[in-house]
Length: 452
Image (cartoon, rainbow, N blue to C red; front, side, top):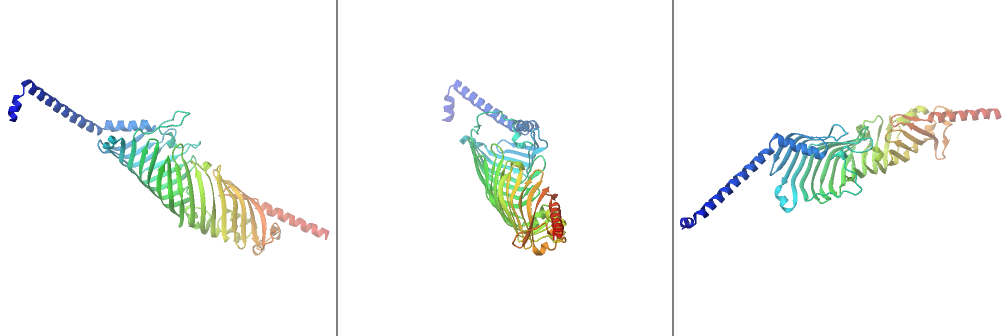
């Protein structure tokens, strides 16, 4: 029946069907061949070079990779990645061992682009700031044209990154003079959704070490992370500092310029360990309790904040200020005093650390006062009062030096003095004040002898 049905068709019809089938098979073969050629063309050095060239043109700086693997249906893998600093900065902005991008083409049918994985292995991010406070990453993409209206740019489709991760990241932030911040061993795992001009995401962050200006080392940082409206929030933050606990939260604003705000509380930190890690010349011991709120957008001149620091059971030795006092008064014990409590409050602003209240109090020695430290030059200007108990005052060998102190009425005698210079090389007018006191005492004795 089938052969008869086929034979019953007119010759023109049979010829037409055969011709259509032939054309269809030919087009299919051509299509398969073209796709195969297209896929093979992805694997050519010319295509890979052109891909990096286009990425470089979009970023406004040179992007290179030692190895490029491209799969039409899966994604892209780059090894040995280097992103150069945009002019006028030199060197590299980012290096990474690997960059892995995995996507789903089928998600485009539902009006969104889904990235199954976006991972960066052992990236190194070098954030540099010029003399005007502009960061190198702000130069990416070339100079934006001036506009009186805010940008409303947004992705035309929804972007979903199911797994965004960084492993073993290192971040260095520098101003024109020195490194302000170093982050070692950062691991990030999160998911991100970008729809229109809004971005949202959540995940977790872990950091092995946060190094603040080679002076303060916070370790074992961990925090849940949430991204929304161009800001990254970390809360609650947990970490350790010199054997003590750190708790707090932080917010980093990435849109319309970099800006951060952090609130931290420290308890149980060991002062001696903190100074050893900072390789400080002076030595001291005690237990540190502190709380602070600090915000800024880059260098030390942008920092604003306030806080207080308290050290219980603090013992000091080899501190420049105390050595200066011991030398001027000729009392060696002053070079390594023991205080029951050391306390100070501070504010930050305009590149200055202002300490409106300094209080070092012990059973035989007290130092109180206030002052300012310039964070750029490290110059200092402090007005202080030295108070000695009667037993310690008697250790001052010269009566003329003891005469410079005034009885406070509570068992202590005081002497006001100023400290200037720098944090590493303080200078004081203490000797001048002692000399003035001695001269006045001598003059009084002379006058007393002549009158009586």
